[in-house]
Amino acid sequence: MIRAPIYFVRHGETDWNAEGRLQGQRDIALNRKGVAQAAEVGERLAGLVGGDVATLPYLSSPMERTRHTMEGLRRSLGLDPAGYTTDPRLREIGFGAWEGLTWKDVRRSDPARSQARDRDRWGFCPPGEGAESYAMVAERVRPLLDSLDGPTIIVAHGGVARAVMVTLGVANPEEAPHLEILQGRVLVLEAGGRRWV
Image (cartoon, rainbow, N blue to C red; front, top):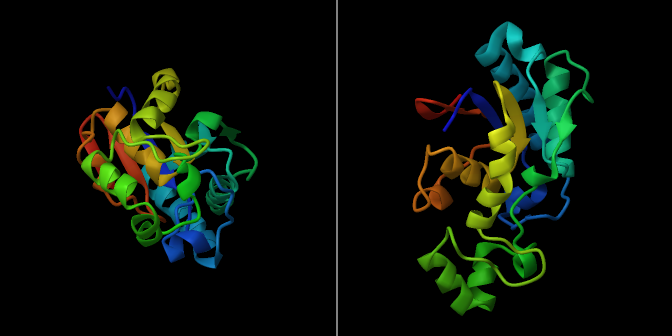
């Protein structure tokens, strides 16, 4: 249940995003386009939130691509780039042994597990250390979401966005893994549902 709006921002583009590689918990830097997207999303937030934009809590995944997105959007808002908190529960879903691969690589090198994932995208956990399912990520972020007591700006990842939407009841486990999670935009999660700005 959503008590107050959450303004969710996916990190800006990295070279691995552009190449279609699974980043998971690898620390990949923003590319030039990603840096520009961070500034752009700050402008979107200013128009969306208005004068309260300086007073809301800002939470970020501790990963480099999210921290740099957060610092870029805060800079574009005229705020102290370092004035935010990181929370490890917002780190990206772990893809384990599949990190660094494209989905085409995965389908070619691990067809049986790839097909198992296609049958249950929400519950499937890839092979390898640190791997997680979306269901596991949802359990990881639930306590954080329960602790929010007002409008909050979050910068995290595509997998986390899917888990957050299901946890908050604005998407279901069947559709969430298939939703496109945009970069350079704001996903507004509120009592009425979800919308992109």
